[in-house]
Amino acid sequence: MSTASLLMLALAALLLVITFPNLCGSSAAAHGLDQCRGDPLRAPRTGHTCGECCKPGHIYKTYRCSPPVSGDTRAIMTLNDFSEGGDGGGPSECDGKYHNNTELVVALSTGWYDKGERCHKQIQIHAKGRSVLAKVVDECDSLHGCDPKHAYQPPCRPNIVDASQAVWDALHITGDEVGEYPITWSDA
Picture 1 (cartoon, rainbow, N blue to C red):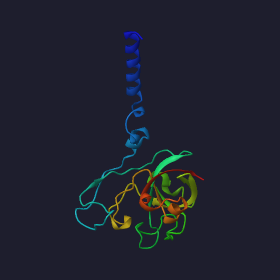
Picture 2 (cartoon, one colour):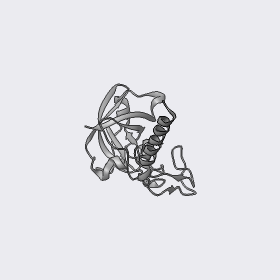
Picture 3 (cartoon, rainbow, N blue to C red):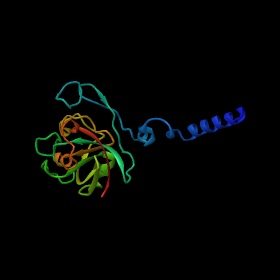
Picture 4 (cartoon, helix red, strand yellow):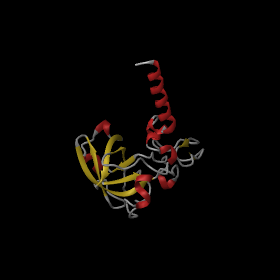
């Protein structure tokens, strides 16, 4: 290839990066999540402390939206106790009730929760070659946190499916794998 051809190819690549900056960079940029950022949330300087609670004075990122939903939306599944007194905080947003850990239920990040549009609907979760249907009963709040309503936990990341123990069990995810696990999901 001639020097002139290489120079033209380099200029074309540079023009693509300038015109479409989201083609390169972080996965947050690739999903447009930079535009979804809300105001930073500062945890109170004193207050409740626990293993998963907000760190006093720490600043947390917040998000108004989540990655686009497709037939195989990538997410991180986290474990939630939806029962009264559990780590889920108050009752579920969709029905104002607590749920047993034996129920196949989930909370979705704010963008996926979509102001309650997915309430009581089923999603299909895939992991480890298995799949399970689970009902959306709550929001995993990506805009607020570090307070009693949110069990003193930080705001959710924008790509979270917060699932009951029953969902983890149905997918045969056990032991050290429980806590955070990469999954894909779709509307059922």
